[in-house]
Length: 114
Ligand code: HEC
Image (cartoon, rainbow, N blue to C red):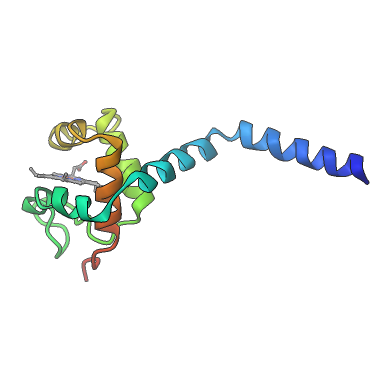
């Protein structure tokens, strides 16, 4: 019985290692955990100039009510230039992890577009 438990434990550890996807998810959760929602509100006023609550306007998607992890993933993708939009690359490039986490908390709590 003990051996069986040990084997299961080993399998779980190997799986955790093998799926690097898992690692990425926890990176994002770590970044969100650094965030402060009031700081996010302060930083987010700049974003509202382009990202309107009402939804997509002139090719700019609404980010209100976006899932916090998705938000972080997208911001990291712009910062690392995996995603190509030059405006968002510049904006994300100026933000550190704490600031991205704060923005993720703030925007995920807002009312999504109707
Ligand atoms: C000058 C206008 C402008 C400003 C200011 C701006 N954005 Fe953007 N943002 C865009 C555009 C345009 C896109 C769409 C880019 C694309 O198609 O990849 C975008 C896309 C995004 C996306 C991806 C949305 C999606 O559904 O794919 C996120 C997240 C985002 N912006 C966050 C922010 C945050 C946070 C700020 C403030 C710190 C901000 N943006 C400020 C123009 C702007």
